[in-house]
Image 1 (cartoon, rainbow, N blue to C red):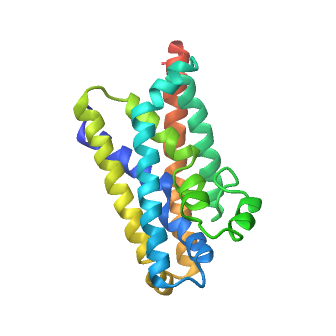
Image 2 (tube, helix red, strand yellow):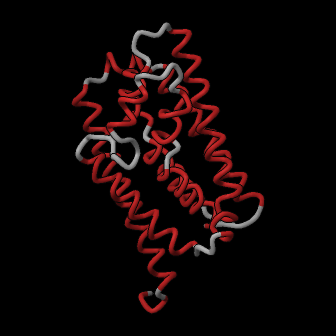
Length: 210
């Protein structure tokens, strides 16, 4: 098991990467014109889908890496670069094309159901979140470690559910500039997490650097 502060850092990383507040404007745009009941139904589906994807990544992420012969150190470097690109976009107060392209946004508006694609995948539980969960799983061993990370995923999912459920009220009280400031702060935190991932990966690939 890791220390208390390590698990706090892992949860903060999950929260910043999934970024429910940054995804809230897209959620409101895709559900515009829907009734409150329909919007709540989509919120429930998003929460279940995000939770399922991240829990599957927690359990099977390392197994998939081993199957393809990919070392966790290489994955840390690749995941760190991916998160750093996302962080740069967040510091410009926009969603990274890695998470969702403009073509996907336009296509999503033509669909009747948007809960799974694009809201859950790739907007919330995208490559960055999956990478972070897989790396977190490798940081410790034992049932207790996996149980704590799984509990953090459940808390994270509950937070996403609350933000989307209250999104109309939050949007009325938090202006666009306020959301942009919040996203830039999250981007700064994410950039630090990304650099740490890259540094740990390089240290594992090249022990002489340590």
